[in-house]
Length: 459
Image (cartoon, rainbow, N blue to C red; front, side, top):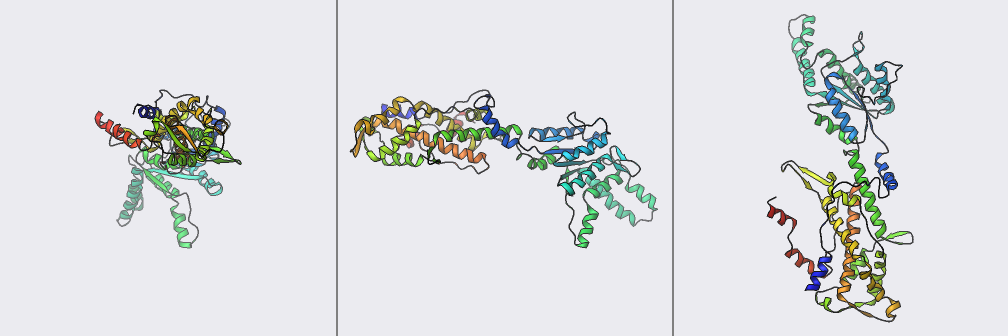
């Protein structure tokens, strides 16, 4: 039993958590990693923010920060990174910058802002919108319009009020004065109402419906009360709603997973060959029992030759993960549980923990002492013409244990790499830690589970 415990101990363990994030963009093949990351950063969506500055200053700052954190470029006139030609007026600079945008974000509040053409009651925000709509029609610029919920309600209330007053015996001037009376939500109700009608393309829509012609596009208006209402709309327009840092981090992790696979898969005729079939075949056809550890185990020569040949791949193989290990301290694979007010691990995080543990054991097991068994029972040493080899069971157990780690590392890397490419996470079928047949079930009963340990801690 002491031998069984020794072998099982060699193939068990937990992942180490490394404090601090390593400089994985500088070390570990920085040039190649940067090339991989550039794939997710090559096209930065550009957003132009249009609104009156005064009543949206904080909101504009929040939108700019949120979008830039996701790797986007944001054009907002009150910030120093807004391109300005000193030979032109600031209004014209704003209109010119719209040409750089992929998205035109319009925020409509209760203030008119500066007049672009006061005589004709055209505000600079309205003129920006008109320029954006022109580019929407000709160049595909996408328009995303928002209006404060209170302002939208003012428009609806004023419309109903106008209908009511139309039936009252009042002079036209008095009716108009009542409908257009300023409120704390709309300093110029007539202008705001007409602007919303223009953005909603109401008249054009009615005309298109009556004539059976194509309806206008880019006319959807989102009412909002909080920043989150706006952020929820803008998130899908960015890099899948992830920050630029998270997108780059996931790309680097995927790159390292593929690099690990590259080193562990076999190659024949220019194609990758999966060794897991051969590992599983030997594992099932040559079962190792506790009794076989005490003496020699009968091994079919043909099965041994196949198995020992692929195991040559592990000679001199040492996996030195950087991003994989660092992922254990990254929030990228944690989910926040509002009811618990805490972060919880995800299935992907649990697989990364298992992967780190498997790699650690693989590295410690792929040593000369274990792999020397391959040479000892090679045809050059024992000759040909044999049907059966009698291999020391204890030594064979260590070699098979190494192959199981090899099997699991490939399986986990495959599952995670596909998940990071956008596919659903499929939890792979993994080999047990113990190379001894049936021993894993006994170990599972004897060792505490994570849930049982948490229960002990009262967590």
